[in-house]
Image 1 (cartoon, rainbow, N blue to C red):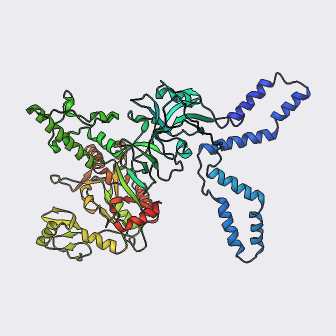
Image 2 (cartoon, rainbow, N blue to C red; image 1 turned 45 degrees about the horizontal axis):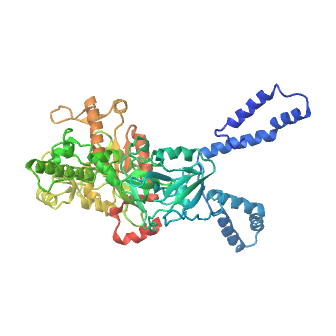
Image 3 (cartoon, rainbow, N blue to C red; image 1 turned 90 degrees about the vertical axis):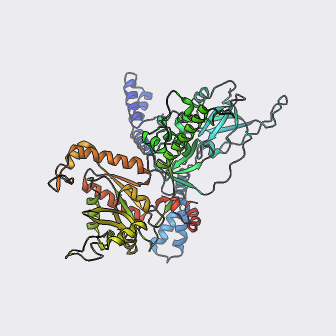
Length: 605
């Protein structure tokens, strides 16, 4: 009775209800006294409390820290025997060798490894009927049904009408059993024939099954999958909720993720739906996610106006559906192509040219709005330069203040590159400290040779930050901080610098009015005073600019910080940079040099 309770506290409520219900039936007989003593006994109450705590513990879905405690204990015992025979060492060895401690460790490992499912005896393979011409034999497959899904999707074969296994979710119950494979035909489920049934009619049959589920299967002709090679990891560049995706084959099989999550791709056999699991997740069952091709096609089909003008393609009209042959992909339908005549009229040629321009615009969207970024694990080695830290954000959001607070927090660890200028050196300034003072001719030569990350002109003089000045800071074994415009990030987005790019965003309008009520912004050229207070127009421009940066360059940003409170934003970025230096992080796979691929495969093996 207690084990069937689903919610913490329900067993206690059930006991109270039972006592009230039996109150009118209890009398002075011996049986009634025994029942009353048992229900009111301390032992039962302790069991109920233990049950409720286990229910709360299970709701948190704990994951084991160590799944081989028995082996760890044996290694410890071997090391202790090699030590000097001190009394405490002898006592610890005696405790570890006791049978009940050994049994406790064994039970712990069995639970940690989830090796407690009942072992079913192998079932014989049934030969096919003599009257049938099928060469393959019918197999009886029995799977133990637990709380998790079976991890397989089914479909109806369009030509034969048979119910076949469409895909096996990696790491799921069906995959772990090794008894059901993609392409297998299902004949029966728990004795119920599946002939003339639709896939949606089979799901309730599985839902009503308790314990073991028995399938009658005809093996498919699909070959076994090849052994897994190098592991594939991607950083997601968009949010995804399978519950809101009308095209996904099975919403329960989908994997929800947020932008910036790192996923391991375990199967790319389906061009439309990949199988992936979240990196570091204890649940090894894979889920469905849109493939790169599907997601980027969806983005392309949104038809942004600016993109059409940039690509030179007119916007397809709603009346002329022929101009948009792949539009069905947004609902999960892939149209391979259109039937065309060998002889094309002028109208047909114009339509074909329009389609070509439209496809070029799709490619342009795919480049500007990628869906996944291939990444690899990276750990900084001793003596290796730190990753360059780039701060990006709209004017007035607080990028300069965050950079200044980082410099003041640890000037021996953080530094900034020395900029170049063509103006004259002032009395209190030193060349190479405040600025590198160079001639206008030399500055323009540097521009032609692409030596500047960014440069501009103010008051008739050039100002700029060179790539060499960034290298100088990194060569001093310091973290180089640099605030740049988003378009300049691509110049430094290389294997050499491995930039960690942070977008600093403003909060909502209401919070901006509160947090910036005393702040000031630089005035425009036509204004008298050099600074002025923020206006609502400034706030709107700040919010819109940040959103434009995120939409256009979001795939470059590894961290997004909302600067609602400067102290909290500083604490957040300071902690993130400390974690970046100590822990393994993820970098684009394109930054990996060829000689590093072998070590990468060893890390992910």
